[in-house]
Length: 373
Figure 1 (tube, rainbow, N blue to C red):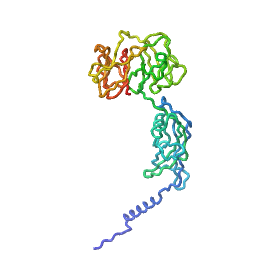
Figure 2: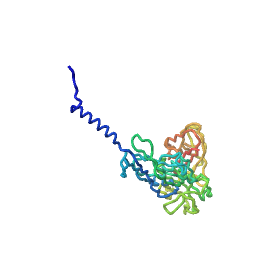
Figure 3: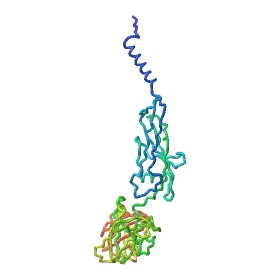
Figure 4: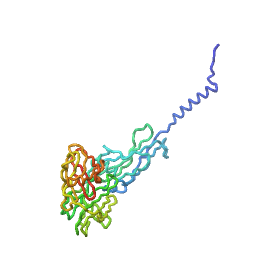
C-alpha cells in the first residue's frame, strides 16, 4: 500500500506561509542611514580654582543633547536602544589620546563635584596646586547590545582648572603670637582636637593668656608661612594670609579657646576650674621604660601646664603620663585614642605602635596628642 502526501493540504500551506512571512520580515530590517551626534552645552565658566571648603558641592553640571538615529532615509529620528553615554576628560590639545572616564550614564547630564574633579586631576593627570591645567570634555555614545563602536560627540568643551592640596583633617594647630614672638615655625602651644572623627573638626586650646597679647592659629600645613586662622569679628574667623585679624586678649588669665574649622567660628571663655597644682616634671611612662624612670617632657616657659617632647619607641607600648615621678599624679587615655585623646586619672593608657612621635600633654585638661614624626 502506498501513502501519498498532498502538498497543498491546509497544514502544508500554513507551513509555507509562515516561512514566507519570516523571510519577508528579515528582508525588511530597518537600515540605519544617518546619525546626529550629541552636542555638549557650554560649561557655566571656562576657568576655576577648586576650593577644599567646597569639596562636597556640585561644581558644575555637564549636559548634552541626545544622539539621534535615522533609519531607511527617514528625516524623523527613531529610538534605538539601549543607549549609553560616556563622558570623557583629557588634557586639552591631545586629541583624547589618553582620556579618563568621568561617568557612564543613560541620562543626558552628570553632576561633577569639586572633590571628584580634584581627586581625578591629581591622581590621573598629576595636577599641582601651583599650576592651572587645561582640560577638554567629550561624550561617547554606544547603542544596541552588540554594537561596540562609539559615536563621538559633535563638539567638546574646555575648562582650565587649578586643584587644591587636601589638608590632613587630623593635623595639629598651633598658637602663634606675642607669647612666642610670632615665630611661624614654633609648635610649643598646641590646640587639641576634641575627637578623632574626621567629620568633626573642633579644636580647643586651654592655657595662659597674658594681658594685651595678640595671637592667631596656624595649622601644620602652613608652618613657615603666614597663612593662619585669623579673627574676622567676635564669633567668626578666616583661614588666609592677612596683615591684621589677630585675636586679642585684654585681661590676663587662663582661657579656653574653641575653634570650629567647619563652621569657621570660635569662642573664648575664661577657664573656670581651680588650678591647684603646678608640676616640676611630667613624662610619658609605660612598657617602653619598664613603668619607671620615665623620660621628661619639656615644659613651656610661658605656660607651665603645657608639655611636649619627641620620643621613639622600639616596640609597641602602652603610654600614660606621670607627674613628679609619683603615681598619685598619673593620667591615661583610652587604648584606641590616637592620635588625639583625653587622659583621665589612673586611666588605662594609649596603645602606641613602634615609631617616633611628637607627644603633647596639657595637665589642666588631660588632653594629649601622640603625633607620628
